[in-house]
Length: 135
Length: 152
View 1 (cartoon, each protein chain N blue to C red):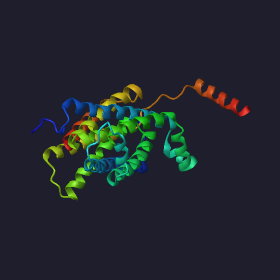
View 2 (cartoon, one colour):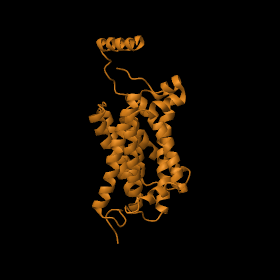
View 3 (tube, rainbow over the protein chains, first blue to last red):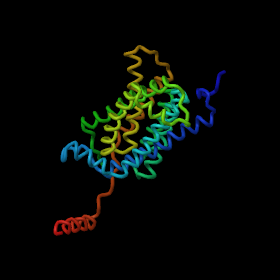
View 4 (tube, one colour):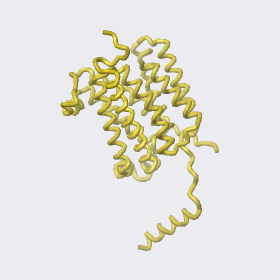
């Protein structure tokens, strides 16, 4: 039987829920990790000053980093679960392209990044490009 | 205000971010599709999947990606680094076309052009949001606190 979406035997809403779980957990993880790395400072400079051990210590003693990694781990297992039920041609473009847009919004709201017209244009172009490339 | 151009080492880090992520995802996909269906009733089988060769190779590549990604995030904005990760898809498409001689449809070429233009847009701008420098009073307060710590 031909289905309108390459969702194997899963229904549309189940597929949407699986992809949404990947997007939400991934966005939370990336924003928290970015916040952690900004609070730590330039890793290249830390490594030059205190060596690789110093750089690793700076990262693993930051609580925000662990919060970010927890969400990224959740996103990873959500992705494994989705890949086991849905086709790669659906999961990869949908999660990758939508995550770019949700990250741009989250970076502007939570990280106060200067997401100007140039970055919005890039996010949208890359989002459509990823969809075309992987669909 | 003029922005600081990236150093060659920083371009290398962004290149690693772009390359390791799609290669890792491809290994994961191959590993997971080889496995039987996993249900939520047996979450332990997801853990067991981590130790299969393709999934393990994918995880090793993704660890390389994560290390370079963290380094990039320490000196650049999230909205600057993320398009670089998408550029990896372009690299994989070119490898598929010129190394594996796979055909690439017009739709995929359009995707490649859009991602390249998008990454070009971001790469031409500043990599980091300019923050206002701390005021002279705050710097003086910090200096007093540090001096106090030394006295103690």
